[in-house]
Length: 258
Image 1: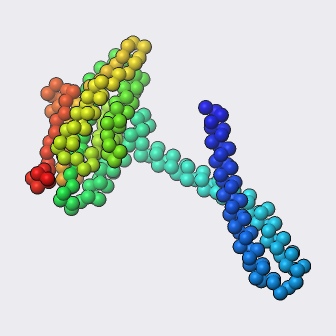
Image 2: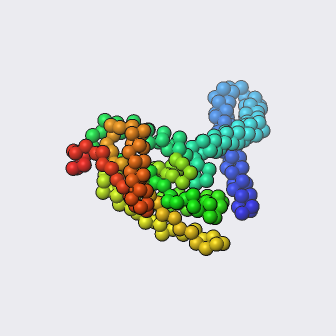
């Protein structure tokens, strides 16, 4: 592990140095061309001195300067990326956090607003009897269960769907381009996969089921309304015995028929 990190670090520094050398050589080439034009009538001695000057100075000063500038730019980019991840990702599951998930849904609604033929679905998923797992096995095991649930959910989604952790053991999923049939299929796939997943512990394997409430909708709506509807369907799934999917259809008849 340490050796691989060392190799990556050396490779990164070499790539920065290569870029700095290329930039310096490009500057040298431009300055040589400029000198050949500017001093062509001043004799070979003047031309030689000019060429030596424009070749040496950029190589001596340009390579270190550009190396430092490129290193700084890359470090700044890396830190910006880390800050972006820290402010949008849930630290435990690496899903979007609640704020970022809501922002992603709202951005999708805004982008697709006015499209009468577009449909999507919002799912609210909650691990069943999770408090019992925490009370029985401790919060460390509870965290492992949450991570297992998150991995399982992500494994059953399409590449363009969005998942976020919106509560302790509660997740939200935005299914793009999903009608009632697609939503039912994906939600059931998630439910079955979570129920089949197993966390191995010193006290034996642990399994957890998940309840899902979902709303399938057109684009003329807002996040709050969608979440309330999906949350009500989640409550219904819990009340009807857990480990089940409950859907609500808010599609206009024309979209539903299509």
